[in-house]
Image (cartoon, rainbow, N blue to C red; front, side, top):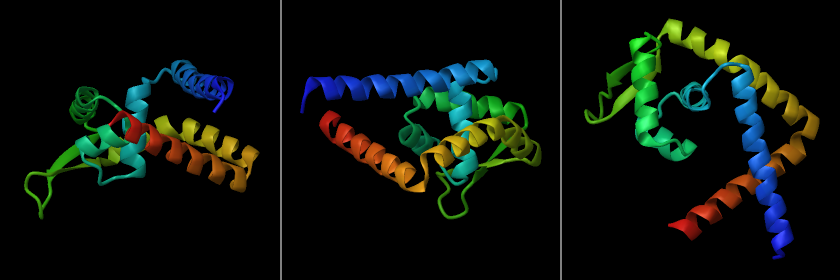
Length: 141
């Protein structure tokens, strides 16, 4: 493959990441906190380890975010009945309201972008990004 295409793809990914960071700054929310809230909101049964791996957030950063959310009364850690080593992370009522408040503008932004691209293109983009991520993971393992 031509280096030009690879450079262009990397530029596009960097731009997207930078634009999300800029959006976070303008909404006075930490990007890692936003990712943790998003992950817990969309996938309520995630463990900290899965959250770190699936969203590529350093495990210490995830742990810090979880501890801060717990101190603020936004989440609870409950022992899993079937696996005592596992702790379930769940929002308190206050935490769910907080997550909705913080996430609503970003979810609306993403919905607008998905609508602009159309269902077919958005599906293709998602599939290609997953394929690229899988290939990158295999090459870097």
